[in-house]
Amino acid sequence: MFHHFFFLLEIVAPVFAVMVVGYAMRKFRVLSAEADQSMTRVVVVLLAPCLALDSIIGNESLTKPVNWLLPPLLGFLSIVLGIVCARLGARLAGFPPGVARRTFIFTTSIQNYGYIALPLCLALFSRETMGVLFAFCLGVEIAFWTIALWQLTGRSAKQPWWRAINPMMVAIPVAFILNALGAKAWLPGSLTTTVHMLGICAVPVALLVSGALIADHFKADALRAGGRTILVSSVIRIGVLPLLILAVAWALPVGQELKAVLILEAAMPAAIFPIVLTKAHNGDVPVALQVVIGTSLIGLVSIPLWLNFGMHWVLGGAIAILP
Image (cartoon, rainbow, N blue to C red; front, top):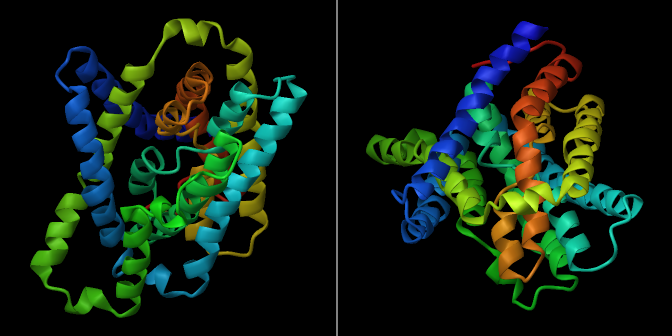
C-alpha cells in the first residue's frame, strides 16, 4: 500500500516542481507578465486544443455513444456538487454573506480539472482515458463560465452567452466529430504529427504559467490571516468532495476510463485560474489566494493518497490500467 503511495508521489511531485520553476522564473524576472499573458493565449488558443485533438481523434473509447454525453454531464455536475458543498460549508463555518463568501464558494467549488489532472492522466492511464478526460472537461468548462461565474458575481454575468465559448469548447466537439468520421485513417500523417508535437507542449507550458500566476498574486500576509478559510476549504475540497465523487465513481455502471477520470478529478485541489477571474470581477482576492494556495500545498500529499485509495476502491487495484 505504502509503496503505491510513494510511486504516486513521485508522479505528482514533478507537476508541482514545474509550477515552482514557473514561480521562480517570475520572481527572477525571466518570465515577465507580458510574456505570461502571451503564453497563456498560446496555451488556450493553440496548444491545449491540439492536445485535445491528439487525444480524441482515433480514440476507440470515444466511439461509444455513452462517452459522448455522460463525461460532459458528470463534469458539469461535479461543479454543481462543488457549489452545493461549498455553500453548505460556508454557512456552517459562519462566513457572513457578501463578496468574501461568494469568492470562497467560487474558488472552493472548482477543482484543478486540467493543468494538474492532464499530466497525471498521461503518466497513469491510457490514451483512451485522456480522451474521456477531455470530454469531462468540456462539461466543467460550461459550468465554470456559467453557474460558477454567476456564483462569484452574485448575478448572471452581463454578457452574451456566446462570449463564454473558448477554443477548447470548440476543439473538443470538433474532435468528437472527426473521430466519429474515422479521421485518423484519412488525415495526413504530417498534420497529425504536427498536432501531436504542439499538444505535448500544452501541459509543461501551462504549469509554468500557473506557477508564474501564483507568484503574481502570492501574499504571505493573506495566507497567515486565512487559517479558517484554508481549513474549511480544505475540508470541503480535499475531504468531502473526493469522497462523494469516488462514491459516484464506484456506484456508476460505466467503463474503467470514466471511472479513472472521476478518480483523478476527485483528487484535485482548487483550480488556479479562478484567482484571475476573482480579481477581474472585483471578488475577494485574499480569500481566493487562501483557498487556492492552501489546497494546492496540501494537494502535494493528498493527491497521491486519494489516487491510491480511489484505485483500490473503485478500480479494484492500484495502478490498474496503466498504458
